Length: 185
Image 1 (spheres, one colour):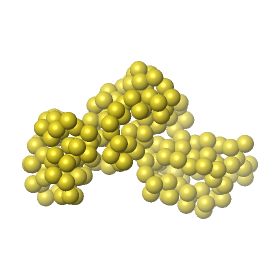
Image 2 (spheres, one colour; image 1 turned 135 degrees about the vertical axis):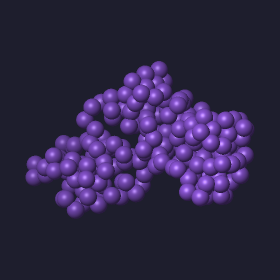
Image 3 (cartoon, rainbow, N blue to C red; image 1 turned 180 degrees about the vertical axis):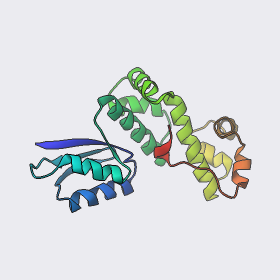
Image 4 (tube, helix red, strand yellow; image 1 turned 90 degrees about the horizontal axis):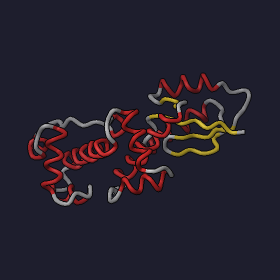
């Protein structure tokens, strides 16, 4: 029998490698791993409470509540799409990829996180825009296009609403105030 663990804050390949190394060091046999979820072969000699403590020490959290697991799955799905620059029709894709109605996903997310799913997604896009601005590789129109905005003025308006400053002001900052995508609520 396998033990399925839903993991909060496992949002990138580096996170996966960290967990793989921990499991290997502790003698767990990994069945599968994907962002937000690991499956280990159950072995009576392993102490899952100790594994949970070690995961917590690394900044991860084992999610035991099904609602929290669903919210984490939503977040990971959206982050993956942002990282792949695949934001077109994302909220509809979310419904298909998670297998629940958009209404259910939206209500569950809002109740759990205190922010609407749409607002959360906008915040993710703004953080990605900040990253692009700091990399100096794309102009504002190209950033807007890559994040699936209709035009740069729409992005600029949302950027100012979320950050309180214009994109140009942000670009002129020596050190931009960015959050990791997994820290956005």
